Image (tube, rainbow, N blue to C red):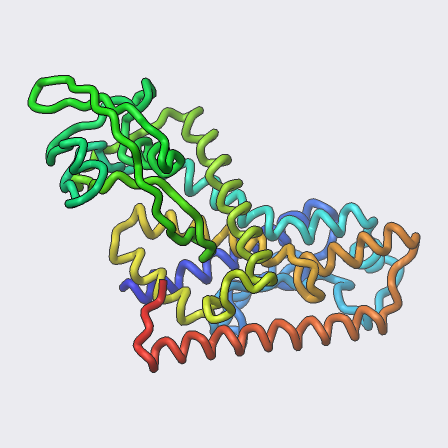
Length: 356
């Protein structure tokens, strides 16, 4: 069932992407010839109006075929009015951009319900004090609850770690609750070198404590959930963009690039961890899909938008042969990247290297 969840997740997110193209094409007055759920051979199909709605054999996504989308389409005068390539640039740009936009909005909706239904967070209660650490020297104990740091209220474990991590070798003052007694303790976090999510080394402050593992659920109201959902989606998008830049700069090693096997493996793990983890993962993948599709690579949405931008600057479209060559190069690049990602996946499977 977890594998099926992974299949449905990837298929659903790509379907949402194509649904964005489909809806905006219809709103723009473009004739949509086919809208397929899945790829490959047709399993069943039914035509309503100008559009044939299909269920295809391979359930990993879908596609939209619009009138006049192909360069060699022969159209009469009536069809030109309804064709994609004869639309003004702003309409074509809206149709293309709608795919990534729908993926981003899907993530916002998922995060909205995650915040609304509640997120389990760690209580700021110490579960273990490590030996020979600032916490041990300051006589912190198991069961101590952190109430404040430097006068700032601490509601959850991450509130505490954010302040401590940003205070290496800087004295901080803790207000703690210990067996119905309120104590004030001064402590100086020691400096440790660690690696962030991008593999870059940085210095943080640590005091040598571990959480108790006790959780409580934080539920937000409608307005706060909506606000947090947008903020979280933008944060994920920002991290994704930074990750791509650092990958190009070779700060992040190329062997971290994963393909479908890694995605399916991660999706299975999140499904096993529960609905909250799975849907949060779905939101992150949806944003990644939006960002990757906006990269200025021919055949991707970002490549189409780049061509439209050049067309707007020139006042006329690029030569069809130039676009065709660019698309071929784009396919070569994407297929090479996919082959490399699959190679990484297979190598990890054979070598027993765990996925992230």
